[in-house]
Length: 191
Image (cartoon, rainbow, N blue to C red; front, side, top):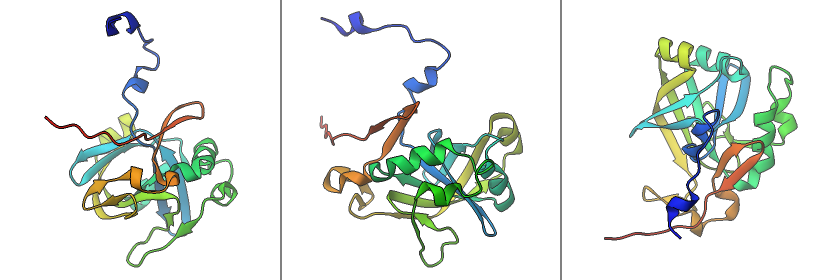
């Protein structure tokens, strides 16, 4: 059987799902003592030290991001899958105790204004590069990474090695409706 026999059309109401297998990221925003955190699947590198993320104007995080001009991105793992789903299903607009109710825990590092969520494999503080047209029209935010950290059990020497670390740090890839994939096994290819 050839692959051609399995190729079927995909409806145009959700074609982005074909290409949105990238890892879910936590977007953490903070203004003073007001903190919010939400998962976002629509995030990606823009350049070696720049990232993009889409944050809808109705999200509580959005006002904090616009006020502080900084965000923290983190790569949550399988070990906190319930927290990921809860934080993506409940808005701080509706529940001011959203973070506490989620059960997500945090820790702090010197010289970092953001508390870092536990259960993640990587974290980066990002300073926004303001592009008002893109932010207003497309909900698209861009920024430069100014600090970054990784859990050395799964990332060291500038390379991922998730297969060597605990399963709970494997990244989660959100599709829709509570459906996730966890990153699979490593495959090395040579020519």
